[in-house]
Image 1: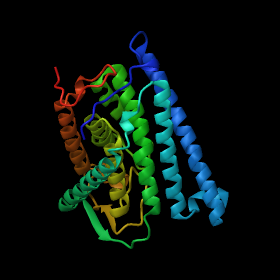
Image 2: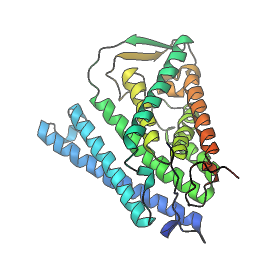
Image 3: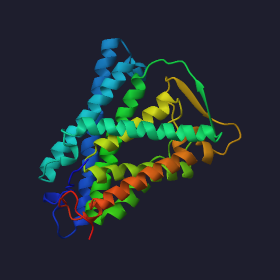
Length: 314
């Protein structure tokens, strides 16, 4: 997982006057130019899939599961390609944060870490009597996989590669960690069944942790895998709500809050990621990841230049 990190230091991100403003404007442009075209690509795939399967265009959500997965994979590929092209043009550098060589092993590692973390959350919560787990009939995993791809890729490109990286470029690593995590939590406050405690959990256990994996590896692949693996395991394998929604149903188990248990302990209708166990597991992993990043000298990076592996903090 060794890699140097290039935050960008040319063209729009070159040092000098109004750097912070140029960084923020470039970040807003990236968000629009990445998200809008990739969403249109997903819409085209949905429409083509609907026509091929006889699904009415006004009922695209009723399309067969494979159509959903194909649309989200196309959306993710378009987002990654568009981001890479914009970085090459606008920052005049190679997007090493999306280097393809390490992608397979780092994605697999991330998926395993995210799945193991959620399994631990469920194990602790069930042992404490905060949640109840039962068997359920397995249907299919197409939609669950599609939602995992969407959340893992699109949210990570937007929140980690654009928001976190550019805040780091403008204001340094600590401010970037705090501001990007706060934004990630606030964005979840409008979700169904959300609360300020749920937003706090998302900010602490996911916003910081997922940024930490990017800092540690210099690439986004582990963060994508952890995010997707966490969501898929939580929503499909254990049948729990994911960030207040139930889009991931269809797996072998059903996880529900125990009757009479506080939502802070069980996560309530928002899901186990808003539980005390979820907060503890995510925060501990995030703290460990940031510590490793600190040991590798990642926190010394702040000017847009790459720091060699093994460089120590001054």
